Structure formats: structure tokens, C-alpha cells
Image (cartoon, rainbow, N blue to C red; front, side, top):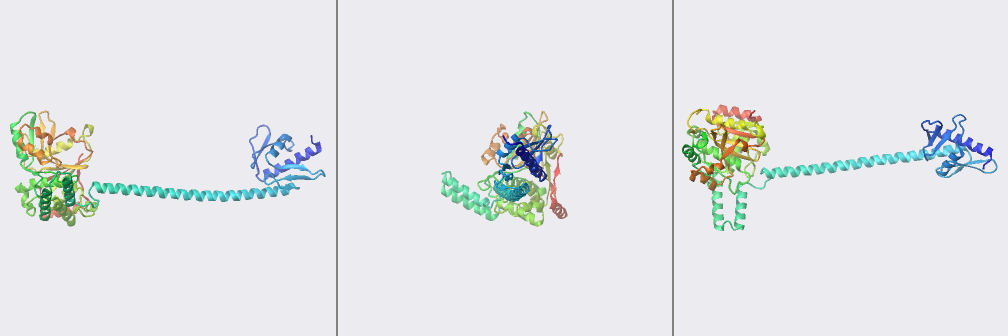
Length: 465
């Protein structure tokens, strides 16, 4: 038990200290709950003050505060009071001195805290910068990998062209025992001769299929109401030199073979009397670019096709044909027009193309119309005709460069129509998101060619629908 006078003195001095600390923002006032409460910001102790007298806390609160290393009081016995710093245990004889001393501690603490916050901010910014750089590096790496993948996919990776692939695949055939060395050397010599002349060697060509189809349809009735066939056209399939990327070139060879058999067009093709080899076709497209056709498309290939395995599509076929003064157009069936992703409008357009001059005529119509180049993502084929069934459904007849000569020869020998499964494509069979066709429709004067060259600075197509 402390004397009443000492207890009062402690209360009084504690009240002074709390008031000073509160004024210096060392304590904060808590929400009122029937009595005034302050919380020390350093030790989080709560002090309760009499709402009337404003004197200090109870002895219990004082002892609790003292037990948490806060300001403690003691009496020297001669009436002098000592005040101990709650932060460093320094003893002061004056409450004002203690207050200033504690202020120094707090200022030092705030300064250190500010430095730490600054260092933390700098560290956070550094870490964020490093993370951004890492993500940027990973994104660039991923983009480069995707770009290289696309280059490989579309033959733009500088891995060689027709010649290199032909030799590599023949060497593989020899290693696997599928080709004898003497055959390798013979085919190599033939290939080099073909490349030197720029003329296709004809070893992937099948002729006479359209004529065989015409005969078959005249002798077979079944469920076909009408059939329209293109003018004569030779089938060309991919070889060891262009397997996997040459479909566009092979379809151009098919289209050109039909034009060369048609007197209306061959007068304009005097410089191209024989079917060119794939490397020659690449050079011909480059020539068209140099004339000014489709500069945007040319830049996509860096103005270079020869010696590469680059895929070509409708735009390159258009540029090449137009440079040869062949009038053609690109039709873009850019979205499905039927249920389940089908393209009935594509079939209707092709029917109209072949049947314009032969409406309501004979069952089998061998037209003078050239075949149609048909492109979709990743592949292209040649449309050589269209069937109209008795139920009014339509079926395209397609030459696919992926079909071998052996498969095409069956169409020349069989009369039961089983080989037609290679050619027939119904509406439900063509479900790519987008199709493009290149359709030939006449010839161009020199002035018309120049006008189309100028218009191809921004190459456009007719969109259906």
C-alpha cells in the first residue's frame, strides 16, 4: 500500500504525461464508451481517465502500463521523482525532459521508418521492373518461336525449295530400301533437266479424266439429274519435291493446262505453251510482283518465292493470271451461309458459273468454262464440275493434288463410278470457316491489264454474302 499523497502524486504526474503525450500525438483517443480512453501508440496500452477530474488512471492501469515497459515512476525517498524512458530505460528527473527524450526516439523511429519505406518502395520498383523485363523477354521468345513455326509451316524458313526437298526425300527413300541407287541418279538427272528448262516433267500428270467422266455420266443415270463439266483439264499431284506445300502450284498447273487447250485463251499464252515447273511458277509470280501486282502480298513473302517452300493462295494465283492477261476474279465466301457451318452459296455460285449458257439443256454438259481454283485454310483444290441430283442437292467435282496418279488412273479404267468418291464433295463435306475461289472469265487488253495492276495496290475481292 502506497501513501495517499504518493498515490496522488503518481496519478497527477501520470495525467500530465498522458496529456503531454496526447498533445504530441503519442496517444490516440478511443471511441467513447462511458469513460475516456487513450491508447499509447508505442505499446498499445489503454489508459482510462476520469471524465470529471481529468486525473490519471487507476493503479491497475498504471501497473499494467508499467508492466509493458512504458513510462514508470519511482520515488527516491527524498521527495524527488524519477521517470524511466519506456524505450531505452533512461531515468529522468523531469517530465518535460522525458517528453523531449521520447520525442527524439519517435523522430528517429519515424526517420528510420521513412528510410525503410523508401528502400521498400525502391526494392518493389526494382522487382517490378525485373518482372516486367522477364515477362517481356518470355513474350518475345514466344513470339519468335511462333513466328519461326509459321515460317516453317509456310515454307519461309530458308530451308531450301523444291530441289533440296526432292533430293532429300529421294535420299531417304534410298536409305529405307524403297529406291535403288541407279533410280536415284536417273530421277535426279531428270529433275535437274526439268529445273533447267523450267518445264514440268509431266511425271505427276494424268490426262483424259474429264473425257472419261463425260462418257460415264452419259451411260449412267442413277440419281444424277444434270452434270456440268469444265473444259478439258489435266490432273497434277504433288511429288517428292513439293509434298506438304505445293498444292497451290499444282492447282495452277491444272488451271493452266485447261487454258492451253482452249483456243480462246492460248493465243494470249504464246510465251507459256508448256506447263511450267514449280520453281518456274515461283519465278513467274515474282515477275508479276515486279510489274507492280499486289505489293502487299509481295512484301509478305519479302518479294521472294524462288528457292523456297512458300505456300501460295488465291491472291498469288490472281496476280499471276492477270499478269498473263487472263481475266479473273477472286470471290470470298468469308462465312458459312448454311446450317452446321456449311456454304450452300458457294455451291450455288459454282452452279451458276457452269450453267449460265446451258440452262435446262442436256443431262451432261461439257462446257468451255475453265476449272475454278478453290482455296481454304491450309489447302487448295480445283473444281472441274458440279452435279445436280434429282432431289436438287448439289455436289462438286474436285481435283485434289493430294490424289496420286494411281488413284486418278482408276477413273480412266472403271465404269462403275466407284472412283468418283475421290472427286465428289457434297455441301456437308465443305465446312471450313472461309473459302476463296479464283474464276477465269475472259482475257484482258493491255489497258485493262494496266488498270488491274494499279487496282491491285490494295487487292480486294467480291464478298459473298
